[in-house]
Image (cartoon, rainbow, N blue to C red):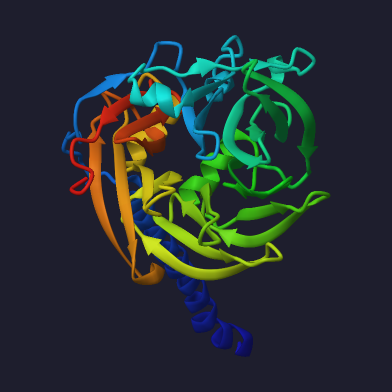
Length: 371
């Protein structure tokens, strides 16, 4: 009698509390998920000037490495290999002179025959130039094992000599790479897991399991974790600043790189759109950022490349010693000209856009001051 009278109200109340907590969490998740998909966002097509596509062979080139000292730009092409193993992964090079002459197409770079190009799917790409020697660092996103491949570039032969391979069990979902010294570079792990379905869960739940890694010449270390989809990286050697895009967080994190190559958090730039790769103008220090304004269209394009996705390019002009900035939108497209652009380079008033799964285009910027 005592037991029945004592337990009845409390035992009925506790399950109700649990149910309400679960429902509140489910509703919160549903709202966050719908906001992440950007169903409410559209795009108004506009160009900074005349645009045309690059050569047909330059397809699926979503990442760039600008080397001002050598006046060269490298493009990686290989993400499509994840969908079609017969797709030939390539590295292209585009000289500043060719851009000025509007040749509308970089040249393919020959790769060391002793290197296994069959398991090469280049993604993030960065370079280090010293004493006339150019070293290229490339994220290899093949289906078996992610690595960083290091090549020596021979300009006369337009040839990449493979030097070494860096691998680690910390590599789960590599994307961006930024070289800060000879065999010293930062890397982003976008997600914690490797398999497609687990990555889809991570994206839908919007986890903060991404990480920033650093290779010190001998080993890989985790320098920052608890990040939401860290993606593109860019290093400003003049200002010793490292920029990192967080795609789902819709922001750019800025770090100060100390002399010992450790990081100090500087600031965060919120964009209200999903950033991908970042290009730093070597003269002005402005950021040019490829963005995905509609995430549901971007994800649909990722799973089915035939579906078009919006492209958005932002220019961030850093002011007041990095404390304030002005954001403009020089380019936007509904996907017909270029779908889901992931990389951007600005050179000699030419805006070059690349996409992991679509064509690449080049636009002339008629008025750089108003872009």
